[in-house]
Image (cartoon, rainbow, N blue to C red):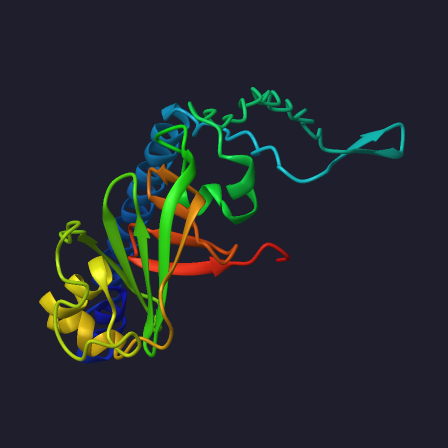
Length: 253
């Protein structure tokens, strides 16, 4: 508005009219300025009435804190929790009783004791027999034993196996059941009967290599897993039942 008033002086308007317009222009401008100042003052009063924002306390540091007292800095060390471990109770073992072997009901005959192994034959199942009639015959592939108290014949092969047969020969029967009537090579009496009646025995043992010998002072005893039988030549035969094997023990062994 002031610019417009100044621009119209040289257009022919009189000085009075232009001066009046200029005063009115300056008055309007101050009114605008005063209104702005009043509005600003009102805004500041409104801001002063708002509540102040809360002051946040500083978070305590987990690490070592420093405290200033009278110009001195004291370092506070962190507290260390000490945990004491409790020892576990020691278990006390109760001693286990060592199992004792059950004693045998019958004792082993003293004359047969050197050939007896408990782990092999077990306990005796009878008191044994002494003064027993026995017979023995050697063959090319093994031997035969006869036991008079139970009339049994034992065939022992050289491969370590043994078998048991009934003695079916009776007094009055022929000496030779089969084959050449000559001993050796043909066995006689009860040995010959088993040898002739059972092909597996005949083939396994082959021909007799010497005449049979007998004794009336033999010994025998039965066990849980076999038997012991003293032969006329002084040796003792160990016949093991579970494995059907045998071994021979001499007096000086």
